[in-house]
Image (cartoon, rainbow, N blue to C red):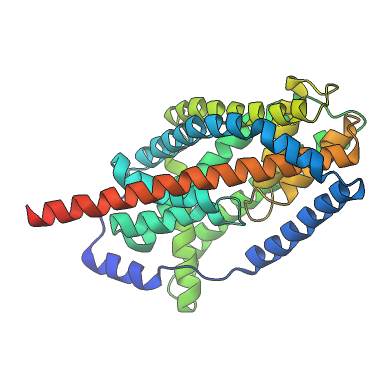
Length: 337
């Protein structure tokens, strides 16, 4: 467990805290917008908007029903990981940052808004934000652990290259993390205090992130795979409901799980974690590989994006407002008492 911070540490971290524009976020946003525009153009080629509207009408209520337990399982998984790295939270403290992160998670890097707000809720400054970011990243790692074997077992017809691409990208990320780990260690031993302030702050944050991540490498962390698997299956069911609603019967539920697994991996293995763009393209191309017409595949992906993202954001927004109001009322009551 991390050592408690002094007041001076907290004040220094707060001065360093906040968001900074990242070129990779900007690039990912532009790429995501371009890929969504491409998918929209495929749907427009055959004037598929009436089909899209019909699918939305048939499936929105089911997906709304699935979204509530989906969010509950995600919250449980994140809380388990936070507890593992020594960040204890009540449910009220958790729900405000968690629901805000859910509203923005589909944007490049948006899932990490929850860590920024968690730092505000707990008052731990930049160090707590960085450590909690390790828990958020671990949720993505758990999703990848579950999605990878599904994607490798449920092979895409005529696309053997996907198998080796997934293996190569995963290996590249592992080597990158190892290089960062050894690089930070080398800097600690030979260059600490010799670089500019911004570099020192960045490397300190990286070291805190890696240290928190290392505490999660335990068998107990694997318990969080259970709620993770539950919420992933719920969204696979939502995607399959859309497949059936559009009238595609050549793709079964197992194949749909494979498609969803590739969408998950596309979002996670991107430069900046994001559900929009690469994940949508991965789903589109996989459905087309299964013989689904381009316009139908585009409608499936757009329907899933509109419903999954829209309903998730609306429900999370409601949770955020209720949690925020409850939090303010609790503080006022405590102060008056």
